[in-house]
Image (cartoon, rainbow, N blue to C red; front, side, top):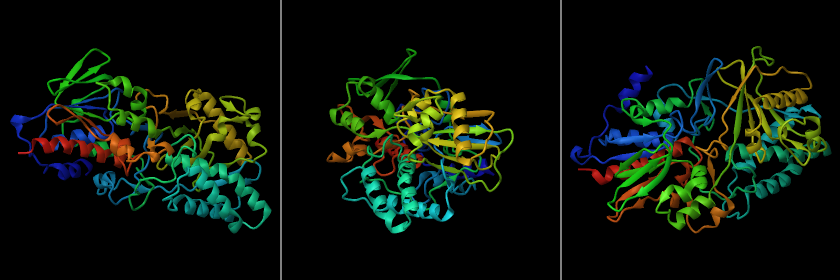
Length: 483
């Protein structure tokens, strides 16, 4: 059913490019943007396409892996929205997306299970103040959220006990924001942003088949996968005087192209943007790379041979007692710590994994993430087990297997996804839009083009935003050769 339907979707693609004038295109990166660009080019008659991928797999920040009884996603997890969403459009008829509402129960390090009435009010207050329009606010999202939460709390919770508990929830508010926005601190995030939400369900999960499904649909009926070269790390992108581009790789091989589409992450551009391009990128593009933000949200998947939770388990969100949080490094001394706080305080929640009954996922955010990525899996397992046991007030077993991907320390990514910083909002124009602008040769033809979620001014940080940019740059090339 899946392959047949996918084929039917795409057999009618256009072939409006003159085959005698078929340009040579090299795409750098086999993530969502690179694969969508390659597929778009093939379906419009441009056949000389090569995709160079530094890693050993296709997908980029889509990283689906068989673990337990189904596929898990170590990178992108959810399809966010239905309207104006390129991911949803590709798979809407395949019956693979299922609403996967995140609704963990609130637990407190000292009080244990938080009363349901308080938890429901907290969720309502958080959603209200987080989604409230922030236009014209020139401060950080952190400043705005703290101000809004502390103004709302006395109106919602009348008892002193509840107000004190609400104040301890400010830390959880930040973690929930960082889970969504991807920074290491909510004071780095601009409150005013250009992001546009795609209408519809925001937490559509892949029901055990993995986000890889969208890549399979994209490539179906094309030779894209046959033209991806894995383990091919690019070391330089050279604009030649004759109007072509030479792409050099670390293994000494070179590729010459009429057009190159660069889809590497913002993190890689920050790391290597100065040395990668010859001649050097224009100053305004370098400024955009510097001004936009990218950090990391990390997750770890835990497999247990025997479940210690039941079918009604919704997960756990963690609220730390204000008198205990700065003593956690003494109570759990393994792994990174700062100012008396252990890295375990960076854990946001533990969640069940759909269609994977013996697997849980743990999510952590904030300034500890780079250090946590360098921490051994054994310590991670011990820390998560300790934290769950503390909050549930009972011993739980260690997982027998864990799996994770270290997005921030991985040199091929250097982060999870981009965000608008305070600095980028001070600029006169959209820095993502500026980053998306191609470099032209002497004839005024775009020869080095840029795609990837960070180049999408209104749908950055999402896979559907990345797909749109791949389409955008492919169309830019296609339009040059239409007959």
